[in-house]
Image (cartoon, rainbow, N blue to C red):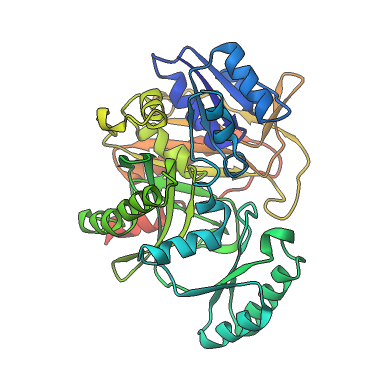
Length: 426
């Protein structure tokens, strides 16, 4: 089987790495890929989705897997399917679950799926009126895609009104913010739940937890994610049951009922409040860096999972996971997330420790190949992933590996998986 992976980040590298270990996979292509995906396959430049579909047809590529949200929201799946090509991901209409927060919230309301109390509006007076009914902190969200930056948690009513005004005027996020959601703040802990669906059947993956804040102790600004681990002990069978019955199943069934069957990765960002799950948001692709810790736990060949989901055949697949833990630590560039950093050569020490070589690996993200050398050129440069029989063991391997990687301005959190370790110690 030949496979194309669309995207250029650590998530796409992790998918490619899983495919590279799959005996059924012959050739792997990335579009556009990054400086390190060349270690796994071939990078492909294409000016648009039609040109990429031409390439897939010419090469006879059997399966395309879409990593990021933007191509999905822009309709890449519809274009490929119209040409009879097998592609993993939701259609443009189904991708509105991420592409429009208002569509998503109204869908949750329609199917009585638990979420925070909210209003959606384009009128500042309505926003201000609802803000006055809430106790701070107050959540203000832009409707459209904002590269993970369209959510403001305001600590006062005045700050919430200012954020809403900037969004509605177009100052903050342009057209993406000209309709907003104002919602109550839910106080609990977050979980990332991923379900692979073929439109009818679905498979729920081990629950993961992301670390969004830049600094230790969940301080500093939000980022795209500074680390993740899976599975998490912050969930038990009872909570899994509630999440499946109240959230995942009604979402897959509701989308099908609305004539928009959901195929691909449904990513539910949940807040757990007193043991009860609430949907904060839906994404329509793997999270990054959650994907980097989920792929190594997949025992079933990756090509089978993605291909059967893309061809509406999940019912004929028994999906299995390793009885292990994975922890991923993001190494970021000097000025992340505030601005760009100067390119810096990446030096990786020779791994002489056999256990480390066996139980840890790197997923490359913001890297470029310059004159045959790998340089850090993006915000989140790479993810050091450790695998172990316990979370602590996996975490130790990840940080051991992080110590072997060097580039100017390297920074990372030192407390990834701290909540899980606290649970295990208590």
